[in-house]
Image 1 (cartoon, helix red, strand yellow):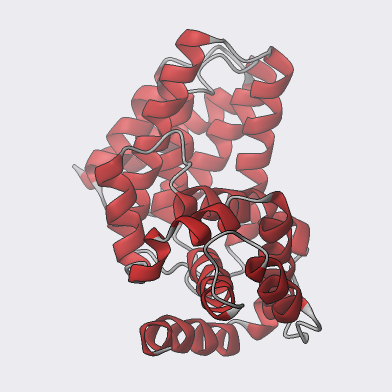
Image 2: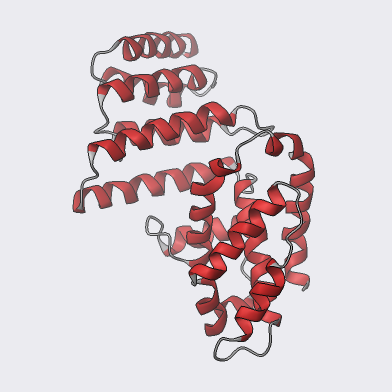
Length: 267
C-alpha cells in the first residue's frame, strides 16, 4: 500500500544505520517506549491531548484513512494484536524474521465484524509496526520530543493530584530515567538535551519532585554530567534552580557546584 512506503523506507534505513547499536542493547529496555508508542497510535495516551496526539503522529507519518474504520480500531485495541505488534517490532529491531506474525494478524482481523478479508488488517499491522519502530528510532525531532516530555509532565501532575504515586514507584521511575539517560549515549543520535530536560522537569515539578533525597541526588548528578555539555544558558539556568532546591546530599552538592560553574561560563 503506497501510504506505507515513506514510513517503511525510513524505518528500513534507520535500522541499517543503527544495527550495531541495537544489537548491543537489551531489547527489554525498549518496552516502556513501545507501550507509549502504541498508546499514541491508538489514541489512548492519557497524558496527551488531541492536538498533541496529532502533532506526534504527523511527525512520524499521518495515519492512513483506513485507520478510522471501526473494524480496524477494534482490531488495534485488542491485547492479542498489540502483542503481535510488539513481537514484530522486536523482530525488526533485532533484524530477525517475523515468522507467522503477519498471517496470524491477518487471520485475526478477518474474524472481526465488518472486515472484508485480511487485507486492511495486514496493512494496519504493518503500519503499526513501522510507526512504533520509527518512534523508537528517534523519528521525532528534538523539538517534538521536548514538547512530548512537557505534555507528559503535565499529565503526571494531573494524575498525581488525583492519586499520588507510592514513594517506591516514584524512586523506581527516577532510577529508570537515569539509566535510560546513561545508556542513551551509545546511540548515534542520542538526544541528550531532550532527555535531560525531561528528567529535570520531572524532578522540579513533575512526578519525580517527591523522590527520596538518596535517589534525587544521583539524578541531579546525571543531569549535571550530560546537561553541562549544552550551550543553552536557559537550560543550564533551569537545572541550577532544580539543584538549588534539592535536599542536601553529596551528589546534590556536586551537581549544584558543577551546574553553577557551567552557568557562569555561559553568561
